[in-house]
Structure formats: C-alpha cells, structure tokens
Length: 227
Length: 323
Image (cartoon, rainbow over the protein chains, first blue to last red):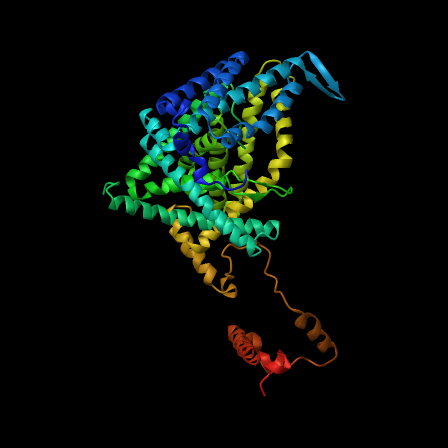
C-alpha cells in the first residue's frame, strides 16, 4: 500500500458525475445511499446467510456497472481484501468441519469449513461492492452533509472534513521531503531510513500543529469561529 | 492490523460496533470539551486526525525486505491522550474503509477496539509508566510504540480467535486458534513492531529537540521537565555528572575502612623496608583539590587553541603551509 495518494484521484466522483451525466448511483440522494449501505451491511453481516449475501453482491455489481464508476478505483476495492480473504478461506477449510474433503500430509480440508469460507468470500465482497458503489458515486462533501443529517456529532463531522482535506496534503508533503531525502542518501540503510522517516514525520507533525493555528485564525477572520 | 470487512458477523459484529461507538463517543466528548475550553485547538483535532491517517500510510522498513506501515495510534495516544486518540483513530478507520478498502464498516468496531484500546490506550499507558519510572523521552516513546503496536495485534488475535472458536464446527479450542493466529503474526508483525518502536521514540525525540513547547502544550511533558531536560542538554557533560544523593552502599555497624592507594600500600612500604622513608612531594596536588583540575583544564584549553590555530603548519600539505 504505497504510492501516490493524490486527492484528485480520490475525489474523482465529481468529475465522473459530469462525465456520465449522473447515471445510476450518482443520481440518488446521499442520505438514501448511506442508509441503504447500512441496511445492506446489517442484512449481510447480521444474518450471515450465504445466498442472501450472494444476491446482495449481484445487485451491487449490477448497480456499479450501471453507474459506470471509475474502473481502477473500483477494482482496488475488490483487490484490497483479496489476500486476507484467501487466508481466511484457507484457515476455515482447515480449521472447521467434520467431513474431510481432501488430505495432504497432516492437513485436512473439510467440506463444512470450505462452505463457510465461501460464505466469508461472499460477505466480504458484498460489503466491498456496496462500499464502492456508495463512495465512488458520492462526493465526500455530500457524505458529510448526510452524516450531519443522521445526527453524527458536529465535532466529529468537522474533524472528519478537516482530516479528509489535510491527510492527502500531509502525505504529499511527506512524499516531497522523502524524495529529497532519498536523493541525498537518507535511505541508505534500514536504520538511516527509519531515522529519516522519523525526522520527516516529526516535521510533518510540527507543520500540522502550526497550520492548525493558522486555520483557526483564518476561520476567525472570516466569521467561521466564535470569539 | 485491520480486520477485513465481513470477517466478523452476527452478534459479535454488533457488539463490537456498539463498543466502538461507545469508545468514539467518549472520545468525542473529550474533543468537544477541549474545543469548548480552547476554541483555537479545534482545527488541531482535525490536523491531528489527518496526521494519524498519514502515519498509517507511512512506509517503514519491515526488516524482512519489504516495507509496511505503522499503526500510528500509540503515537497519537501519547501526543493527544487516549480518549481523543481513540476517537481520531475511529474517524481514520472510516476514511480508510471508505477510500482505500482498508478494514471495513462491519469490522469498524473491532478495529476501533484493537487500534484504539490496544494501540492508543496501551501505548499511552506504557509511555506514562516509563516516564514515571524516570526513563528518557526517547526510551519511553519507544516503549509506548512497541507495547501499543504489540497490544494492537494481541487484541486483534483475541477478537479473531473468539469469533473462530464460537463459530460452527470448530476444530480447535480458543487457545488453539489464538496460538495459530499469534504464530502467523509474529514473523510478519514482529519486525513492524520494532519499526514502530523506533519510529515513535525518534519522532518524539525530534519534536522535543526542535519544538519542546509543542510537547508542553500537549502535556506530553511538563514545563518543569522540559526546562530540566533543556538545561541538561546545554550543560557540559563533565558538569552534569552530579553526585547522587541516594547512597549506593550503607555502612552499618562495621567500622569505616580507610581506602589507600598503591603509593601507600606498595611504594611506601617498599621504601620503608629499604630504609628510605618517603618525603613530602614538591607539589602537593592532592591538597590543591579542584584548583589542580582547573589548572589542567586551562592548560589543555590553551594548548588546544594553539594547536588548532597552527593546525595547517603542523599537519597541512606543503602548499598550505605559510612560511
């Protein structure tokens, strides 16, 4: 999980909305989408019925195809949990069940465990599909409005908004400083790398700290904060 | 460190979500209290949340030929306190689930427990204990980072093994699943824990060296401690070696034994046997005490200055020497 985290690639839902003239999930109200997401998760995880998870997965996939969400980012949602899910399937197959299917040396695969593992795959990808559908088709500003409508505490919504804005900025600052350090031999060994990364991390922290004061004064000057 | 979406189901998922909401709610109360008391610190909460999110993206060497990412929550707990750090970790997990498919919404509660309680709380607590024990900022930070990181995986292992052991047709006991999970964690997460240990200690140390006032404002260290540490940093090493007031050896009823040196024990006794008793020294250095040390120090300083001033004459290349 390394690479460039550009805010433009994260919030491309707005551009996509313009490009697709608002197809599929782009047209729906964000509050409805969030509510639908929570309902799907409750049904999927709460009931944990494999055929239900499969149906919800299928519906989610069809909606994603209809909405024409960005392909690369959507695939990322499916690739991210892949390794962990495969490990879980392997673990379930070996660790659960009474009916042996296959034996290799001292490792036995069980029928019931494999069925449970497949159930896990369906549940994981059902949730991932709906997460991709909602967050690919909803600009984050609208997600925040929906969270406020759902009575999420104001302090948390404000903090979330600021986190969203500045996380990527801090990471891009880190990337610039890291590249500069790399070009000057700051990553010539493991301990050197750790020291370099720590120094840069400390600098990022101090910049964030100073920036928070500047933000407060800017908001105060524009009437966004009470004296 | 994140438990993937869909792994935990049914009642455990609901229970973890409720616990997570409770912890984040408690943290939100702390945040609100801070924002009401110090409105100028409200943006700081957002920036710190962004910093925690950024920390979880930081690539550190995993000592196994790859890079991985620290938890970040131990450092957040040390800097902001466990309550606020738990809430910010919860928000960070939401962003990670929404934009990077890292973790999930159904396992959000379990991840808040592992990262928030395991990482932030235990990281802060071990840092606090280490500082109380008188350890330095770097060592305390390192201990906080290490313990917080390890406890994150301990809590994750406990969560997962509980879920697996209570599932249908389990092959192993709870302890058996726990053993397998920890055995799988150790080779991969052990090096990351070491990396986070150094990262946390070094970051705290660098912040302290550059801007100790930040740590004082965040109450990581007190103003008194900062002043003392700064004073010790500028004090010459020879003067900072103060005699300890706590005696390391206590004499009881045994009479005091006079400790003599080689001169008295060997040389003087040999001289007495040869019929040549020792005479008083021409220059009684011992009686001079600190005055002699001062003379040596001054002499060394003057000689060093002269050697430094004429270094090129003594050791430089021929064309650098001036006639």
